[in-house]
Image (cartoon, rainbow, N blue to C red; front, top):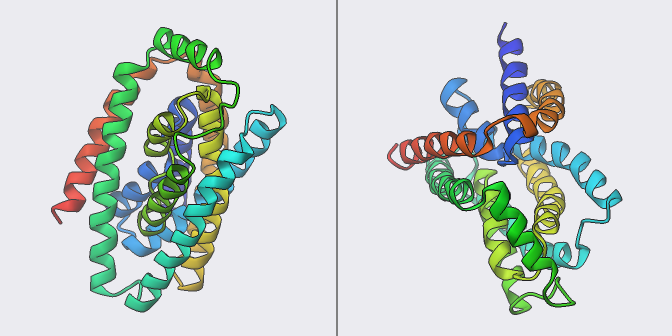
Length: 267
């Protein structure tokens, strides 16, 4: 019965990801902690590999459509991968099951969820379908080299910050990453920004997830159950997206993420 609950949770998160694009980490990790009583270090480590596997399929699909700006992905990885390794080293020194490490992870996760809630609400308010079409048209008509950032160091620094955030919380790529990339790459069309965010998250979550696994912070049977539920959920959500009130769903999700983030910070 417990196994079926995990499969159902994976399906629910996958469905929401397919409907809204909100990152699975911001949903799955707090769900595992609050509803299933999974220890934070196990929830985070398991979710990192969960994210890596689920984002691989999306990256392959986007690459076939030639939407992935690989130069942007490379700049982000140049910052995020070393930062993830640094975060893993810090966790190794602390011991992932130590009270200090647990406190760092839960507090950082709470802050990350609050940031994700703000980014999700911003997108729900500001990016109606009409507004998104206007922004896309404006961006596509601008500079010839859309993958040129405001400054070369900005995506590397952004990658480093998100690399640390993802390693400690499994949250960061997704709503937060897309919102900041919109500022760093002002000429890049929105579909390519989303593609970059998904593509660079694959090596990041894979490195961070395998690092957590080396520390004993991955529940492999749980990972299998979550994947069994999430893959059909993502498939169904992506096909229902045109028939659902996305702005309403995003607003509700923002409130839930803010509640979970505040609860973790105040623990």
